[in-house]
Amino acid sequence: SVSHINWDKRLDFGRRQSIRGVLLHGIKKLPADAPHPTPPQLMRWLQMGMTIKAANVQVYRDAVTLTRTFHEETGGESVVMKGQANALRYPDPYIREPGDIDLWTTASTKEVIRWARHHNPKAGIEYHHIDLEGLKTPAEVHYVPSFMGNLFYEWRMRRWFQKEKPKQFGNKALLPDGLGEIGVLEPSFDCVFQLSHMMHHFFFEGIGFRQVIDFYYLLSAMPKDDGRIMR
Image (cartoon, rainbow, N blue to C red; front, side, top):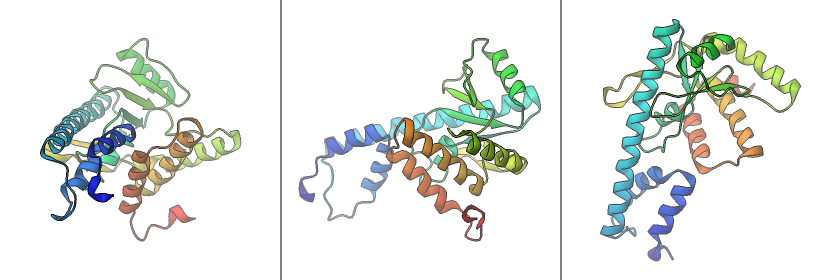
């Protein structure tokens, strides 16, 4: 029954799916005659919301620091993929539960590895990114945004990434409350990238509600006259 909502279970579900901030945003918009959490339950939700906001502020700051440091030390440009770039599309830029920072740059693979190893000589090298330490937020610097399991599709997608790459580094997004700005992907490119990323999750890690909500807001941000994603 709707009148007997177990708000603690909803909070636990939100924790497992990393969407507690989104659920809290919905609770705040409930009409007066709808079931509401009790005051003690609401206090737990609100405390959690404050924690998520503080975490977002930290990740935004670290994303700005990482972007600025890369530019100052290499002269190259970068974009933040997924994560905090997705959070900016939400109705409140502080309700998405943040994770790490994914950075894609204008630099070559060798240049990325050289730069990351300068900051962390033991930085772990993966197939499409290298880990970067030194900030409060874990970060990955990508040589390529994503990858495919099939060699032919991998070659085709990499060729498309390379073709579209020059268009991705002139798009800046202002962060909330004067926290700075970061580079972001064009929506049409971002759509292909995140579909590829979601497919990887589907086969190897599982897709959660956070990825689905991210993609919903990405599609909502697509220019109405941009039909490239459909071709």
